[in-house]
Image (cartoon, rainbow, N blue to C red):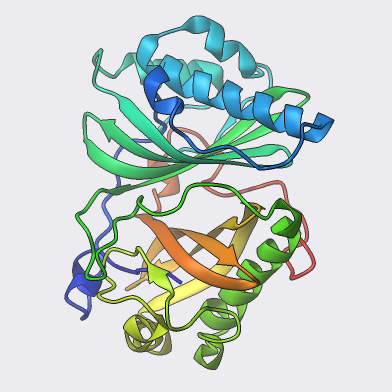
Length: 316
């Protein structure tokens, strides 16, 4: 699964530090052009809707930088719910936050853009006045308009001990016919091993044990053997508690699992991102962030509170 990492896993010892910067990002137009969104199949009504949603999100993120007000028309101003605790609710809250950032001080490079039904997920290399971060933005659509938004951030670090960063690696969406099966696989992996504590399942056949590529910051080697002893010790000791799976979203060979728990008693959000191949988990990225206390949040919507669907191997 992931690097419950920053300083502690880098030293393979104790403490995790994942200080996150401000939320929501933008994409400049040239950056959005390099995002891999090809699917390798013919156009259909479903495909056309997905592409429109992707393009609308990329245009919106670009408008954070360019100020193009027409891009904000994709937001349903009467219903827009903001879950980012550092941004006020509604369209007015988003625009107030953007207005507080000095001109030219926000930029993002989308790296992966995925669609799962009414959801668009963007993994980005984001720069804000507070620093350089890896981020996830999740947008939910209703009737062609954005009605809800979540995000998380983690400061960018250099390559881990396995030579990987939190953003490099494959970007192309493939195997779309396996979306449901891959979501189920990711749910099973997280629920069984990290929530259930059964590390006998952390390996074959769920994971490709020998070549599992690990992008988590503090992991020092690829393969299950490169992370199992450390992660097992953290879970077994109660240092790391994975308490709940909040949402499982995916497209083809990629799946994002949003969960929550704690590290050393501090509440955290965990965004674990997997790549699958031939029915196994073969690659992993993550972003982890301390939760903002409710009395410090700029909206009262919570950092999770996804519209729920069955969170089970047969569900989403």
